[in-house]
Image (tube, rainbow, N blue to C red; front, side, top):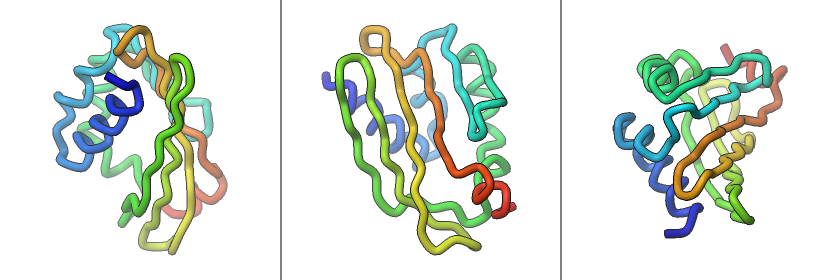
Length: 119
């Protein structure tokens, strides 16, 4: 299976709210680096618990409008076009790093000033 297919499956799981299916593609000792690069979650269990509050982590009205995957080696980058109640259009990127077919690190890259202004 292509790694980009695994990432796409994860995005689809998020859209369905099926967080258990999402975390099945992560290693037990995975790392999630949140926007701003200062907050880090370690471990699949911690990550899964944080997903219960996903609505509070995203700007009100957050909606993905387009999604593209770029795969090279053991990495996939998602280019995410999105909008929210206060933003008509913007982009962010997410880096997924793999060990075999499991994600061991997910790192979000966003314009943090823009992101903070949306809450």
